[in-house]
Image 1: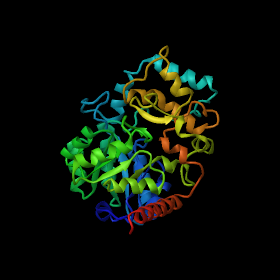
Image 2: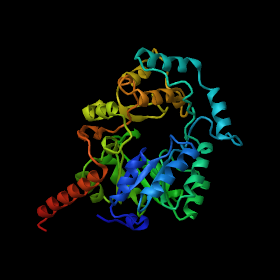
Image 3: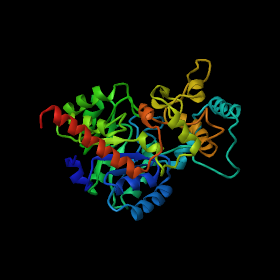
Image 4: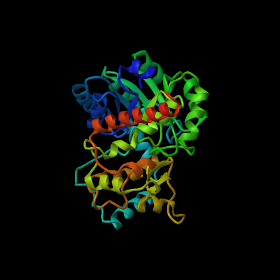
Length: 373
């Protein structure tokens, strides 16, 4: 099961676990894979705290996932601090969108956040807000991998990360994007089919993986989008992938920082309960369908704004949904892929890694018997 990228990172298994929870990232790294912490929700100061904790609790290495879209509102505005950019972009958000979002939450009985509990409106969706995050990453030697979730990273970020001895890659949902990543000199590509949770394209994994693998030649491709068991890992490696990039499956592990009511929503859901929607981030992302996603699809209501303006509208709903998951059950932000239909119980992260490996071995043994080996 060991591939070349395992040797480059010093990991045992090519199992990559994207997660917003540091406990999950640490558990996967310590089980022989590599946990990749999603940094979009953290300020640079908060990310420093998270990575310092990972340094103490990870015996090997871990990764960090950033979000620098190729296209977004505010791109090209230079010379502003993250705070100044947030204030400038906030002026572009129509008050009607904010009022509509607030009414949705109020109509469903979701309480406001406690007085004094402040959060930034602008997440790390821009080059301006990501630059301080990269400075933090470079101070942590165990952070050996950096991935960009949307588009090809700017050249200046690619060079500084590679010069530090780290690997940098990016997600893609099409052959065109994968070739752009290769031409930019990235170290790997994460090829995500439309089944995947969060931001995704329109082509299924089974069709997209081999196209991208053939298109980029010897550049390592990590297969993503719908992987929840070892049989799927075996299928990805059989097609020529260098590893499996997983995400949704880590939402229902013991270590996940997911409120019980929200986790139960994932466990109860089927693969038919997801939808690609721009209702939260402004770009198409897969999540559980609910009253929030339906409301923003209604032609009589405001249309979702471009990234990052829509999240500036929706972020209060994300925060309130996390704090009050029972009240927000029908309007919560539940990013997850179609593999949610396989996520029917709570497991320990280390047990998930072990299960993926065992199921991979069993799948390979079945093929060996078919081939008379």
